[in-house]
Length: 124
Image (cartoon, rainbow, N blue to C red; front, top):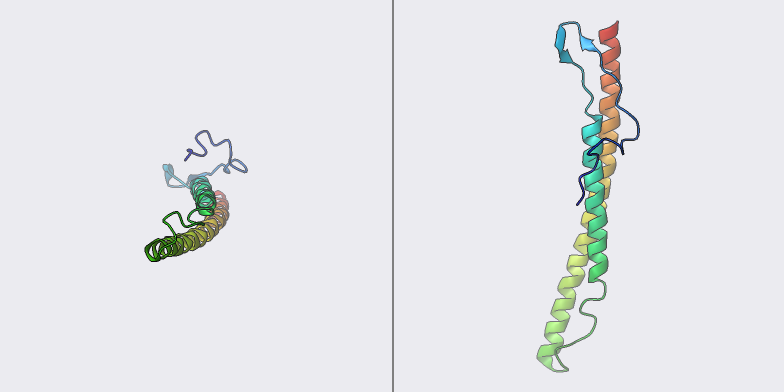
């Protein structure tokens, strides 16, 4: 995996400047948007890796390499069934991680909106 946003170059827009609290400079309102955007990017990358892993399994165990005997057919059928189950699990997990990435981006926007609202109250 890569480390996204090492220089914040992939953020959709720069984080807004947050004002200092009336209680002093040690208290600032800070947006968590960048952290959630980073989380979203990592989770999206995981979803892509799961899809790639599933694609690698696509051709596995299609034919019986163990021979046309009861044991060979049984083992081949069992391995094929396990791989199909694992492939279905990969599909489910890829969908969940893609949904999680979307949710992280949504949370980022919510945090930014809350921070902007808090900042406007501090400035008033």
